[in-house]
Image 1 (cartoon, rainbow, N blue to C red):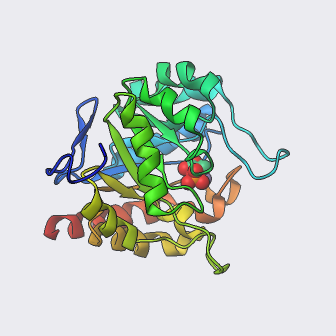
Image 2 (cartoon, helix red, strand yellow):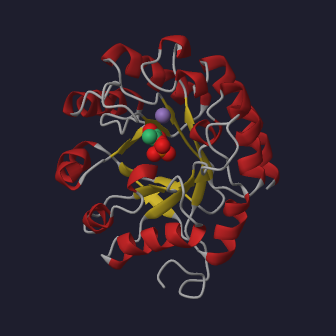
Image 3 (cartoon, rainbow, N blue to C red):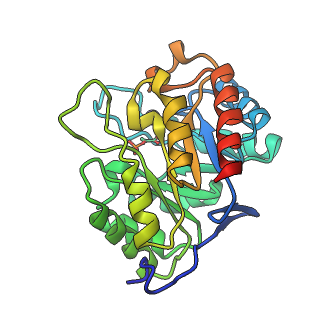
Length: 264
Ligand code: PEP
Ligand code: MN
């Protein structure tokens, strides 16, 4: 298999417009769960840039549990992301939720995010596999490591080898946390595959006060980076405010993970 260590021994380094993911590079993707407004997004972008992130995250198309919840600003949101990139130099990673919107999201984003709910949307995987955009592939909420790596194989088998995995927690019987962040998957994936892997402690825990410790743990486990939700005012966020860091907490998180990354 293309994803396997047998196929390729050395670690893959994915280049996203000059920002490297994998190897000894600590990649941090941060920003709000959803693009809510121009002001909210630009504020978020300056906050995460200042703290040292290289990527701005933010959903313009949101896969919400309820159809009545905020669904995202769609192309307007993509335009705001592009403006934030122009103003900060941050790379843009944003979710593409279906085959039809691959062209429009590709036109604005530096990296295409495949969300947890779409990890086994094989048509979508094949479609992003036919593009030359780097792909962030989140682990399905109930996917085994093997199913997840097969999803990466779908993308690579179409010719796109620029795949980064993201552990974002899996569903277990535990309900104190939103998901159970499976950090053993980080070490396991490093053994089985050459692909870079990052950790999302925001969706992985669902609780802001668990995000900083689990971000530290993710880097200590060998992850190549992090995806973290940050909001200028989490209490007013339209989605995932409970797991979003304040600017101050994100700044502290960055200082701590940089220290850990240095000794890894
Ligand atoms: C997200 O990162 O915006 C998101 C929806 O996460 P997940 O697909 O991991 O639930
Ligand atoms: Mn979210």
